[in-house]
Amino acid sequence: MGHQLRKLAIAVSLSWLSLICFPAIAADWHPYDWLLTVETEEIPNQFKYAGSRLTPLVEAHISFAKADNSYQGNYETIYYCKGRAFGLNRFGLLDVGPGQSVAVRVVHKTKNPTTYDYKAAANAVIRMLLDVRTSHNALQSVTIPDDSYSSVTAEMAGERFEPFFAPLETPYQIAGALFVQDESHKHSQLMCYAPNSPGY
Amino acid sequence: MSDFMTVKKATRNYQGNMLWLSLLGFLTIIIGLMVGASFINLLFVQNQVQKLTDEATINGAVKLNDNNRIGQMNDLISHCRQLVYTSREMTYSVPNTSPDLQLLSQQILDEDRAAAVELEQERKRLQALCANESKKAITESLDSQTSIYRSLLPWLRMQTPHIVSVEFGSVKGVTSNATMNPVLEELASHDKSLKLYDESSKLYFGNIDAKLPGDDSDLTFKLSSLAAPVNGTVSPARLALVDIFDKQKGQQLQSAAKVTVGTEVKAGSLSEHKQDLNVTSTATTNGAIPPDGFGWR
Image 1 (spheres, each protein chain N blue to C red):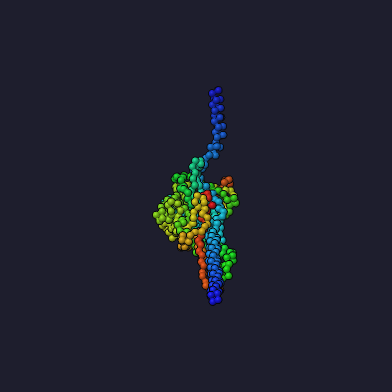
Image 2 (tube, rainbow over the protein chains, first blue to last red):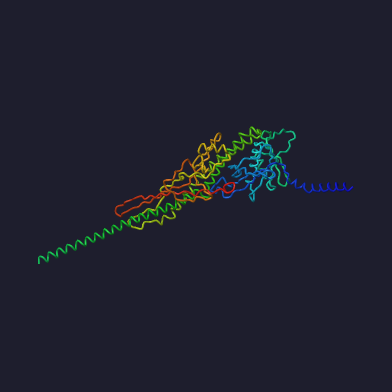
């Protein structure tokens, strides 16, 4: 009887321990292997001359880190003038290795992000899709701040990544897809690049 | 009596010669003083015109790289070159890895090439703008001070100093402020083989068209000469020797100005003798501001 009670006590203790520890384990778990961070920021005092067509200048700095943060690196900075890419400065290779699951997170460093920040974020994410796919990896998801979710997805549509609504009868050939969600996970959308589909 | 008369006559003659000699002496001294004063005045005028020209040239040179616009343009051109290069590389690798994204990579390359063409147009516009604003600054600087410089002597008249010529260019041997990127190894080796950059400083040479290899060789990436910062220190605008001025080549952005200011000196009141007095000054603009963080803030 005492032996059984001891077994029961150990079992209860273990289950309590697992219950206590599980959230910590869950917090450490990520549905991706690598995280690419796209930070957009408007750079002040650039090209300040009469009739300048290059201002405002927004940079999208892209860095990458392993999901457990054990490895970090700077990848590149893309420079956008009025929302269009005009320059790139690469700092290193996208050193994530093949066969990895990669997620992208958008961050706005500009205090009050403008349309140009959203355009820069949308374009940088699409460029990252190409980079990730050509390095034999999969782009899992794109997380966008809650406040700019609708604006960035609208700019992605301008870059020919349309929101995907499952067509019932029309055949649809998707060349590239991005699962986009906001930070609070209240909104999500599959954005598709399907240049060969009818009505696209 | 006759002896007395003889002595007296001789004395009178002697005194008369002294008067003429004294007058001649005074006249010589006065003429000498006038000639001396004229020379001193001329030297003073030349010195003042030189000072005026130097100041106007410096003001004009400073205006060329106002708000570091040349430095920023050089940086952006160098970055645009990398953008087109990496996009082209992407179109080469996509067919083997993700053929379904071929159209997307081509679309991005087309956008980047269009940006490079637009940037070259903007660079040309900036070049004209810099030259106009610099000329305006030189003229304003000269106009504000020319009334001060007048000849002090009535027989030596000067015209108000005026601009004879304004030339733009760069200082010989100064590289651009754009650095090569060793991360893009193939591009770096291409640039090295064409000697586009200085191997010790890793800065691209000034006043070059850094053409890309292969299919994008039709695009223009003109990098102009501009002193790069050294250990975070910006090179200030300063006067330079006329000999090291290199006249503008191939519509490059200009980083130095050479100004010649002239005045006409008229001497004499009866017969007019005119002489042109030209003074030339050369100045280089302030260098590029060092980049901050990941970009060039």
